[in-house]
Length: 490
Image (cartoon, rainbow, N blue to C red):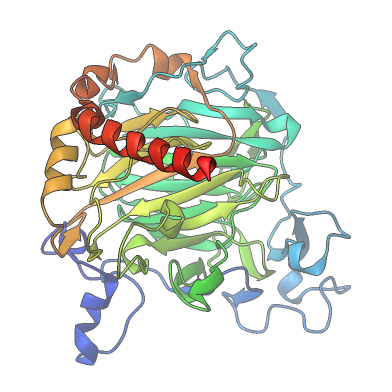
């Protein structure tokens, strides 16, 4: 049995996962002590798992007869002829194939979700204004599960175009009951912020707590339980791409999110004869199919198209040990490529506890304008450089090429005082979901009572220090002209 946590914030108060290993004084372990499940480690590997040993056929995938009378079913997520390193598939050996269902019916549109983010859609809004939202409220009336609690904040593109993304929040107070869901549009990167998620998938179980993330890929059925009660979190959904680890370049073979720290489920089947419903999302619309057996009847499986989770406390931060700040790409956990090799479709970055030791360096983030659309959230703790209104469960948004930077008081203090050696983001983890594509904001987020704007008056007192040096500058320029004149007279 998994242990219970004496302190619910135990893992929020550590600097890094390495602290749990007690300098080798205890046997090493890969999961939090209250995680009830076993996992397989690695990223983008070919995995195999059997709930009953000896089930997976060897030397072939689809024999004339699978052991125990199981059905072989292949899930293919790429073109059959995709290059080997891009080919995504899994073989499932199950009591009944997924085709055993009773047809599809339309479900009413969820007016709080959106999939078409083209500006011609009257339900989305374009704005250069720096926006933010206070934490969204979890409903207390009625039963609201993970699917019915989806709310879309922003996005770009359209899933039917096979390139784009959406950012959602989920606000749930009930576990999914005899209901599974499947996203036929794209991959979900799920970030719980309040309350753990007990996720049942066709491949096995994932226990995902605040401070961890998971990825459920396109076409994979899953069901979300709420073992801690009401839950809130974020979702980055991508269309036409899959998440991968960013390249490390001069870092070499190790650092950032290491491949071995990604955990995949082991097979666990459920054989139940009872009514189930499967909620499909396709083109942003929702549909329902029914069946008289559990969709989680997979006894064994193998392949490389498998859901996974990652503990953000294992992220290995890197940075400057001399001067200046390295670009924020050093905080990238996962990236999803686009058709443009120089601009990713989506990046998921985190800002977690780390040391800053750069000398002779302006400590806050430098003033900048960049091409990326940025949507930022806070999982837990306090994030320096933001106002008190930036709270766990809230969101801030900045579109591409909108200027960023701190108020003058912080600029002045950071410019005058030598930067100390200091810990950044103590007991806090913030994240950023960014894209090379411009975001539009949904009606639900635009009209939310939680929305507020970053007050531009905070920059009104950014004084012109240069003009204070006018006499000195004029003298330097005059001397330069004089020297040029003498040189030309020779």
